[in-house]
Length: 214
Length: 181
Image (cartoon, rainbow over all chains, first blue to last red; front, side):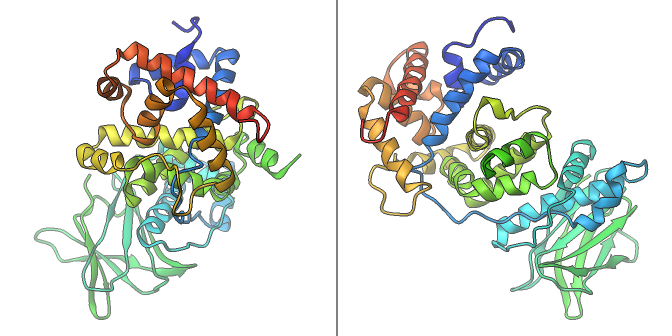
């Protein structure tokens, strides 16, 4: 029913007061009807204005991947998918970590579109680390569900943290060591496989643990 | 072309730094909207993140000719927040907290936009009561339209009609010259 104008549903759509089915129908119509889209745009202006009296809170910062790291991928060559997906992880993790700790990550903007585009095609998930001790830095790992890569971000620029993968009946496997990158420490691991429990440790012992779910 | 126009065009064209610039320009409002709905800082953070990604990824999701980027992003975040609220297993607790948040009539704390806030309060006050009540219940009280209809004791269709009328009336009120309300 793409040919029927939205009527009141234009305002209700802008207000977020439609059911899922109604939203889907509205969006199908909006894709082909400029008049209704304009009506929604006007309604959105009003709904946006309604936010003005809301209580304000300090917004968290967002981090983006380093431009130098993503620039070579601009040509979108085959084989860069994993790298791009990992870079996408930085964008996501930057958001997440900033949210936990209100840490201002160094924003490095260029290439964000490529990284985010990779998210669309990347089947990944993320897990937070449970701190191993009081005062331990927050950390998250973003990982491909097929075990193709994982990306660790620690909200402290602490180089030399060791990331190990534990599996039942096997010795812990060292996946790599973090390096400082701006306000955070990071580690990208290519082809780690589907790892069990992840342990992040420093010279004093366990910093945190996380268990990816594939 | 103003910097705002420039940003809107850049966002629509998916210029690499536009997502970060858009967030930087509108973070205060986006986070406030998400936090108001979800009443939880971490959930609000996730919500803004997801909404921005969705807006950035969807082809032609933002069309500059159809309104300001700010309004588009606020709508995206609010819809994302409402979806999260309604999908959440913790809905009841969150809704209870969210419902304690009332429309901000006399701000005793920092608000998103002081000047605009005053105009919005005046415009809301100028709405007919049968339009203002449903709108405040749905927007500031985060009720679903079904629940709002139940609480107000009106048929769902009536509630929807009043909400739509309220938005259109507000549109006219806010478009009036300052001091004309």
